[in-house]
Length: 502
Ligand code: MG
Image (cartoon, rainbow, N blue to C red; front, top):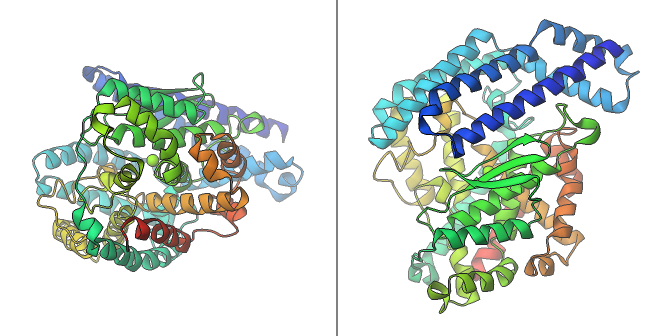
């Protein structure tokens, strides 16, 4: 028993280290690597991931796990070891369902598909991507057969990103959300305020934006000896180790607040990663987030619930005004608050406002489900996309680049990922709702940029659990219930109706 347990911890430590090395290589590629390094870098990354996958599905590890999961043995283990062993068994069992040939085929297909997608997007030519996507959909259907979770085949895809989430639960949540989001949007679009609103066009220089972002993360209590903020094309966050988290932003985008809000968002991810269980769970499968949706909830919590609130700007707007005096001199706090919350149906998901964002996700979920159900063909996607845009957002993109080709997810094989963005947004609202009931002072604290209590609350209720429980159970423990779209909808109404005079 001792021998098996030691072996399990030894391998998990190696796998965590491999994971950190892989993340470092990936972080470097996206931030500082010279472009010509790409080919060798992809060899380096694939070697690391192959070595770690081989260890993970090896007979030797599996035999030790099986010995320990024998009920007579398992019951004699300490509670902490039981948790680790059961989690590991579940993870390995799943990984072993996938034949190595399939893993290789999927990886080859997606690396070609990614390049084809980039070309298709640049040339606004869906046909160049279509055959690749057809192959990916076929492979993903095969994947569902291998995993074979009960219920809808798509459950097996969802489970990789959001363990325990099902089509049934999502359909329930989205069928509540969809008509209500459309209704709220409709009312806003009919308002006088909406028809008078203009895009605020202003330029902020990069150096000052950078200073603001660094002030922001200091206020957010990001420890500078455990995290770094750098620059990349698309902002992201990654962990190299428990005490080394990297996140990025981009100061060069056209939208004046892109850098600020993406820093808020990614810093939320970074704080979560830094708060994951260490000590007894360091170097184990437990020291990770239970789902993509819960990770996203932490970024959305800071970005939306805090960063788009009136109190937040009570502190930060004067700072912003001082930095960009020329541009902001004549704009008062209320006008600014309206500006950062302006609703504007747009083609691009990542540029969407808080209200319409969910509709972009529902559109993608419906399409993915229809593809897995054989209800639509890949070649029909551009048309289906545009019809749904019209139905949900009332606008139709002129090009596929601004439509069906905008996201990279499908090209890398990620079908079932999109719903986690909506799940994260809803969880964020529920968590904030709960926090504000437990601590009504939270609004004042935000107004003073004093985030100490907020961060400890998140650490205590969300971060410290790692993968001891599923995301839904973590949320249930804090909020008394799992995914609840009602709280999200009433939050939106309470915020946007007064803003637009509805
Ligand atoms: Mg995110």
